[in-house]
Image (cartoon, rainbow, N blue to C red; front, top):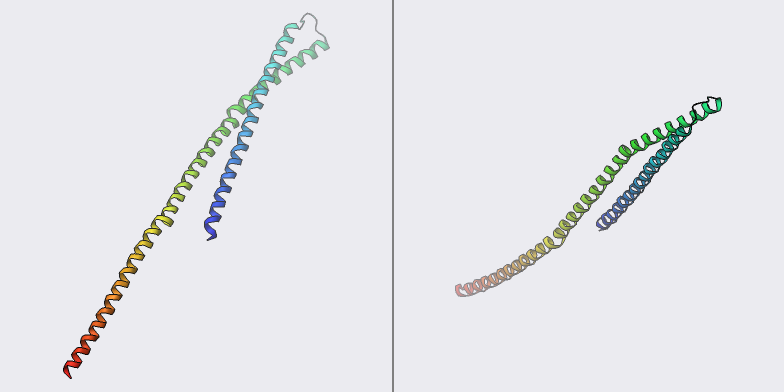
Amino acid sequence: MGFGRDLRNSHEGLLKLQDWELKLLETVKRFMTLRVKSDKEYSALLLNLSQQSEKQEATDYLSTVSKSWAQVVRQTEELGRVMRGHADDLNSGPLHRLATLIRDKQQVKKSYQSLHQQLESHNHKVTRSDLEKLKTTYRQLSRDANNAKDKYREAVAKGEQSFTFLFCFII
């Protein structure tokens, strides 16, 4: 009866797979959360840096160096805005969907375990309780059949004695 053992092994395998997937998804979520946090901090630092550089910028004299420096500051500020936007997009999009996926997988695992437990309980009831009831009924019916067989033999024996007695009486 290897089928039942194979199912138990597959149940344990499915649980291990679900646990592994959940652990991996939690790791990805932590990574993405840290990435969002670090990108927001980095963008805030870039914006702060560009704002401080603009304050110190001298607008009295325009040279190619000052124009280049202004361009570096603008590019730094733009990079800070872009990184903040990307961090916000990552936080609201994939990270939110990942959190939803994790909750769904946890719910599926909980449902699977509940259904498996119900099936195990039903299987136990059928194989143990119902089987014992059927065995008890079989034993009782077997005793009844043996008793009926004994009564039949007694009746046949009495019938033969009566027939012999009658036959002797007629002769």
